[in-house]
Length: 535
Image (cartoon, rainbow, N blue to C red; front, top):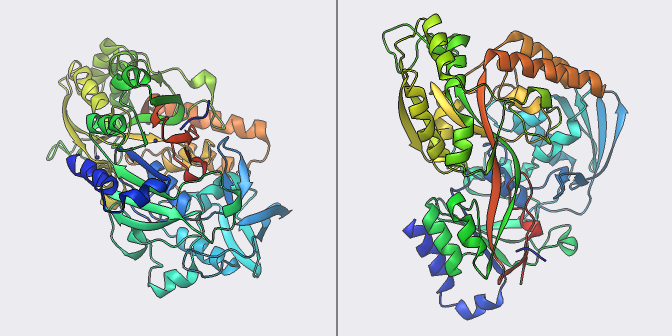
């Protein structure tokens, strides 16, 4: 079988598209209308590092190397690559490629993009953190020089987005502005070499793409769509109703309680599969005084016993059974099976033991508990707010007074991220390593204080041993020795209770079979328009 795809205002926007005066003409077009819970955080490829946003950037911007549906690598703007020596890679670039505005793609754009993406304010700098220099050899050859042997350089290349140097300079946009919702020029305009160009973006309402006629691989595209319309629809019931009514062709995620219902619909398929994303909770471990305890001079989360008390108080099996309706896998690690470096022996969740939690709080001097606010998104992960709501009474049973601050992902990520200097004491976050390698979460989540480290280490967990191990993992070329270093780092982080991993959620996409002929669901939970085929 071939598989196939808003708020009242969002639905109205979709309806407006389907009821326009050009309806007859549009009926002849193959328009792919799809929806997810929230909008992209911006169009600047070097700004935000967020799954759905990165997916959209990948439709618009070219990369040296692209990741195929089976997650293997294939040439994109680079046609081949080779090691010149231990630290030098030579990439031959594709000739005859143009950006959406007609400017030619050359080696100058690769060098310039490296300089722009490596800025401290770029959330995407992690992907090129081991690169010391990108130098032009000729118009269609570059050399990438790393600061040591880099075993996963190629795995990071699908996160290195190539921009048009001339276009960026014309619009005075070299500086990357941190944070979601920024309205600087490259965040609301786009000019890539990718297969789709932006036609219209009305923030939080619709993003419209059309195929780029000058795309270098237009003849090799699997997709046949004439237009794609992404509509953010945060409300689950509205999103399901839009799918059932035919206003949209595809939606994700399907609310867990609606999966059986949609499976019984004649013209709808539910595509399910595992996701590599790990959902976890984190703590402020750097302030001397907790935000919720002004005037006390205390931050309980700096004490490992308090963090362990929280870990033992959270019943992951109950969350899986009640909140996730079985559609999750409780975990003890910050990476999922399938990620390079995963350690099965460490994947046992912290024991659910509230009595032990109370003992630990008493030993730490917090037998009477303390107040804390839990920052949580309400439109990003499957049942994210419901999970946080489930955690609150579990912690209250051990004496912790928890307030919930649930809000849309753009506000949430700005608050807990570096845009607002990690303005959080206790937070939820989910993470899929963009490289599919364990070094990524070690750099992004578990270390801090060096370029490419700690962009989403929102609680600023810091252990020098883990940092030292991460530095060695970066350049260790022997697979067994590298795995041993990763295992040691994960063990230290787990003993420290640096974070509390909760689970890997399952994917569930709803697709109309009467309009969509084929769509490929990858474990990254992204919709790559290259692989969407309409009836």
